[in-house]
Each structure stands twice: as structure tokens, then as C-alpha cells.
Length: 534
Image (cartoon, rainbow, N blue to C red; front, side):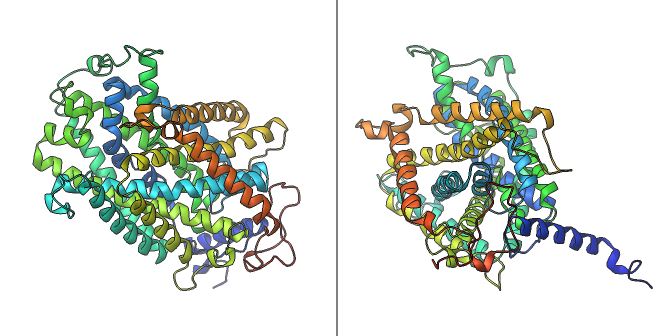
């Protein structure tokens, strides 16, 4: 039997051949393949959809939208989707062209150069660590409602009982996530995929159950504003813009599907599909959950709707037993969301460290020969996440401010990709990968829409609203302007460090370097003959 007709020409050989092609593409970008390619289509899709985590986001923020915009806030969901879809389409082209770890950092670097890339990566990395802590806190709003025994600190009625218990539960979750992520991407992917499967099944069942209990039509629910526009300078539009934050806080993180590009099979083709599938599936599922919750809740004007959120709606509509089952599904969703957030942060830190763009870069970029993952970034991100929780244990208002700012920083990091990409399009310097995902003649208008949307929503998120940044007294100007102040300090301070210290060391570390980068690519990583030690 000849080699051409033997078993080596079967599906396994084809997969190995495609993986070799992907490794060759990585080599052309200047990097040696080190992470193990073990992830398939569903794994990458699951990474994106678990970061968005519809059950986590809707159950955590439904009350916010209703309290500031009434049931009519639902319209912000399709609005945010349309804007984020423009961003996602731009990311799809980049994921096909540059299937590398640390997507936002590498895309910003290749579109805008090393300085823009570092700032985008720095903003995203800082935001990711705060987001990790924020998502872990969601255990507190779910587990004690399932069983009082999950309230380990006090009885929940003391001044700091809930905050302290939230830190305890969140720290345990982050510890679990750190161990799973450190022990290898395959273990993380298996748990994440199983969790996403449970979340999707639970979400579909929840939609069906709520639909079976509809008591009113959309014409009633989706036009109810509770009169929240009265007394505002912009009328209900001002209230709606505030309420839209509840949707903007959920629909992001779809780029995680591409951040695992160096651990995926055929990422140039699969990553763009995974990005779009994750965003579209999240939009549809979330839209129906929110819609049918508003149509099925016994009393549309119940005060608990704007205080208890979906945690009130589900048991009130479906009964305590069924409601508890769905709350357990929310716990699963929160768990896999934390896994995905940390996994994305690890790849981002690894990518920046590999370019020697972080202190102790050689240690942060080291891939464990046993587990095939960057273990040090996993531990470091986990430790920082727990520290953020502990520091804010008695400062829930300041923590809510920082959490809101973390979301803004992610939107800003997205802008640091879409704006340079638009400039390259206008200069005729952008060419999608041949035979891969491409927007064609729609590229320019979609890119313009993505930039306009990102800038408008970032401004809306950062607007100094007392009800968002200083919800309880006493009023402090530095809290209301916290977004501008915090982001300014992080951006200016971080970039000053890069400019005066780190940029003089930057360059792909020798142990991670492979081949010669494309000289025609202005964002290609430098490859100095002897990069200084970290």
C-alpha cells in the first residue's frame, strides 16, 4: 500500500496538515507555535458565548434596565446588538487575517503600530481582571436565593454580611477557575463546553416556560416607561440611554472566540464563524428571555421587578421549584463565564509578555511543558482578581464604579482596534486574507459604523450620572467623574511606563521567535538579535 493511499491520508492526516498550515501562518507572523491545538468549532464558539454569558448578564442586570427605563428598556437590546455587530464584523476580518492569541492586543498592534497595540492590550488586560472579580460576585445574588446555607457570613441582614459573603464565594470561584485554566486548555474547554451546553438548554427551556405563561401583549409591555422621562432634560430618551447600560454591560467579549486562535484547529476559518455565532445566538436568546419575562410576569408594575430582577420574575411566574432549577443553571453560567474571562486574560497576558511588553516577560510567557498553558499568568490574574474583591469588601459603591469603568475600558480597547483599522482602509493599506472572511465593499461603511458606535457608547457609559457612579450619598465629584478620572490615570500612567521603560525592551523574545516577520506589515513584531532579559 502506497503512502498516498494509506491511513495517513485520512481525516486525522488532514487535520494535522491544516494545523501545520496554521503553524506556518503563525511563523510568518514571527512566532513559534507553542500552545497545543486541541480545540474544535464548538469549543471556540463556547468560549465566546460563555464570556457574553446571557444567563449571567440578564439575571444580573435586568433590574437595572427596568429601574431606569421601565419595561420599554427592552429596545436597547437590539440597539446594542446592531452596534456590536458592526464591531464583530470588523473583528471577523482580523481573526481570519491574524489568528493569534491575545486578539485585541495583536490586532491593535498590527493596525496601529506597537504603541497603540500596547495601550489596547494594557486597557483590555486591566479591564479583564476587574471584570473577573465583578462576574464572580454574581454568585452572591444567586446562591443564597437558592439556599440560605450559602450565606456563610452572618445571616445576610448585617451591614457588611452580603458584601463579605460575596467576596468569599467569589474568591472560591476564582480559585477554581485558576486551577482549571492552569491545568490546560483541554480541561478548561471541556468544562466550558459542558457548561455552555447546559446554559443553552436551560435558556431555551426558560424561554419556552415563560412563553407558556404570557399574560399580556408586546404592545403593552414594550411601551411601558413608568413615566421615567418626566423631569429629565432629554425626556425619556435620557432615561433610555441610562437603561441601555444594562444591555451594553452584557454584549461584549465575543472576541474571546478568536483569542484561542493558537489552540484551535483552522482558526482562520472557524474563529470568524465563532464570533458571529456567539454574538447572534446571545442576542436571540437574550431578546426572547427579556421579552417573555416582561410578557409573563404577573404584575408588570411590581416594585420587585426593578429590585429583584429576573430572580424575582422566574419564581413568581413559574413557581419556586422550577425557578430554583433555573437559578442553578444561572450558577453554571456564572462559573463558565468566569472561566472564559480568565482564559481570555491569560492569552492576552501571554501575547504581550511574548513580545517582552510586560515586566518579567520571559516568566509570564513561559508555557508549561506538562500542561501546555502559561501557568504564571493564570495564577497572577487569579490573585489580582481576589485582591480586588478583598480591597473592596466594605466599599460596594466604589466597586460598582470600578466595575462600570472596566466595561468602558473594554469598549475603548475595541476602539483602539477599529479606529486604526479604519485609517488603514482609508489609506488603502488593509487587505483581508485571501480566501478567508471578508466584508468586501461593505468593509468601509461597516468599519465607520463600528467606530461611531464605539465612540458613542463609550461616552454614554462614561457620562457622569449620579445614579450610576454615585447612587448613594454622600455625593462626591470624583465618583461621578470616576470613569474619566480612572481611565485617564490607567491610560496615562500605563502608557508613561511603556514609553519611558518598556518600549526600550520590546521585541519578540528569542525563545518564542520563529522565522522572519513580513516586512510589509507595519505592525509586525520586532525581532532584535538579542532582546534584553526581563
